[in-house]
Image 1 (spheres, rainbow, N blue to C red):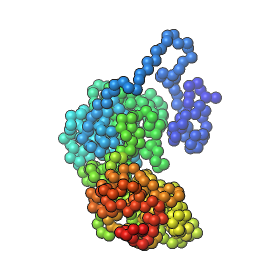
Image 2 (image 1 turned 180 degrees about the vertical axis):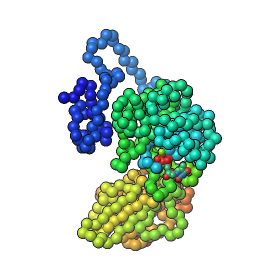
Image 3 (image 1 turned 135 degrees about the horizontal axis):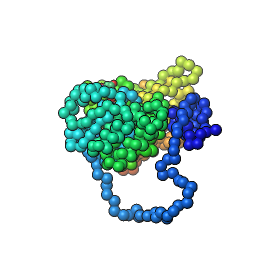
Image 4 (image 1 turned 30 degrees about the vertical axis):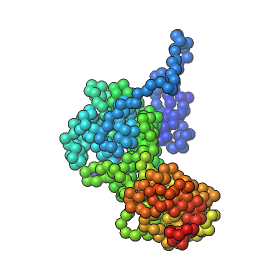
Length: 459
Ligand code: TYD
Ligand code: MG
């Protein structure tokens, strides 16, 4: 029988149970339920009779609103993902793999904001003050008036933040913070939730922006911090492939801006450099384009990005052919392979297929379908696409090439980077665009062109 008021929180998924058991009923993790003693949560319904009527005031949608004020930190890529700067009183969760560069990014943002006059604090629960200072020196930011502290006690942090006003506070990381009001160990769901709750409350009350850093587990969920995603105003993921210098800050939730915005950085000796023009970054512009490569003109957030998609189709040595994808969706690849087989007469049944998005970028746009198909066909035919050609278009199961959004921006960006033609969905008014478009309304036509290397003549 559960004790009165006792609940059991799973340290793996954050699910709450009223009874203890050896295995979490929600996520099937073993030995993950830990008792939490709760008094009634503040604001919970009580069963006593209300003593007075509470008036609920409604307002119309058309009433005047004020845009939230924002602090421009001076790191434009960060500000862009925030929606144009950090909103005072907001709480932001930044998640990412250990070692991806979260501490570096946030120290840089805090330092730049401090140089622009904002009062900034950086509280590290993982590193000593000397380590943080040494990093700032290496990045040439030692002169920035950021207040540093190494602290993990929530009480000390809370008192410190109440005693002095800050505009921008970084907590690195939320998993190291612990509250003495709870018995559970640091990093447990209980502690993470308590620490985040307290810090978010403090942020709202004192009008300071708080950034919580959170580490991500192997599965890609923000461990522990997953349970605080609903408490914060914005959730950003900081991503990067090991072995590549590029880092991408991606909005996953944002109450003060669009979530499809990305910020691109490059990790170097002196910290993270902003990449203002990401298009050229993922592109190998030197040398001939090999068979099996297609340049995709994509859109990431509000910006066009050109990226090379590489495919290799090789005879399979085993009964079950391999399909391996990096940077793209494997389900989407299966679909494209099926359409190529059913509508274009290509056969992949006895071949291994590898697909890679160059530069460590992850693409989720359906507009990449045609580029992936072109790369695959180019590999099958061992026939390179023209060096100066970009490709984009969505493919339907019936084998049609469908128009995609923002074709003009894609073409303009490609023209800017020296491309001279595009293999793209056939649309009525393609004349007068930035590039001559070789229009394809059916995938089979596009594949035929690649096979015949027919780029100038009509079909
Ligand atoms: P860090 O910010 O500590 O990662 P996180 O906080 O996400 O765990 O970054 C660690 C990595 O960044 C480390 O592998 C070294 C690299 N790095 C650079 O390459 N150049 C630099 O100037 C800095 C500060 C770090
Ligand atoms: Mg760190």
